[in-house]
Length: 422
Image (tube, rainbow, N blue to C red):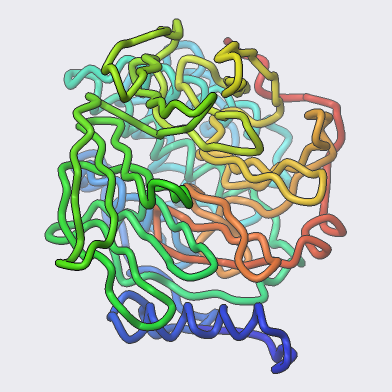
């Protein structure tokens, strides 16, 4: 764990220290510093690479600075392979061979190359969104090889950020889906074996440490308590009662989030159904399959793999929805509003994109990577003690940045050079 010196008299920072203490005492924080890196892999042959496990948390880690192969590949061969991939995005051998060949390049070489690698990565991101939306078991291999190549290119062309996190630590959990602190509690959803829902009080009291079937997000409401949503299974309410923790399945298949309007409580499901919980009646069905949703200032902001470069925004008072375009974001993974700014993290680009509150693009910061100044498949954005907190799926890292440093570090403009391929 790493942190900068901070004002000891700042009450919110005292809360932050409590948060880290609670996580540590419950064994959820790995002791590490900014120099820690994922496991080292040395790929010996193309056959070994082609047959490497398709576990995302395994193959992403192959893209550390220590990854090497024995034979260097010339640029012309790389360019030809890249064109071959573009011409047929379903050719697994081409996807795998280009990934393998790129491992022979030193970090930074692709950045100065004349080939438009960022454009290819954007095409792969859109292809990945299509595969996620299809959700077909027989397409898993193509989906995984697409993402392997995408992340390798992102890492190869990324620039080292000059933005340093104020706080940085790794959660001792695999595949963190959500990390949501509140003033008095912190909630975490993970995808590992055993317990996968953690709700801890900052007073060092465990409210809940349980296992549910495939939870993917968690939210807090001052009236109804914690709600655990799932892109795959049913959703639950969790509340504390005198005799312990009460777990109430709501019965919403793929229920993502609950919200209140006109003294009624509604649920939004991954199938796009808005259900009145009192009557269990579906009162509206959206024409999109959703995978995540957040409640923000009277609106539900939802994400769909069928809507790359877009957000679906639902007005909770009227239940009307609109589509908001947000290029150059390709696959939005989470959204957070603070001080008239909208922060959106992108799953495949590993960047944090900042918009005005009316969604005018202002620029981006951070890049895909495995060091403490980068993000690797950022899955969650929230606020902790006035800082923007980003949690990454690949390495379960939690990084907290001052909003000022992120704004100062912005690069880019409204020029959407890439992400044009549909």
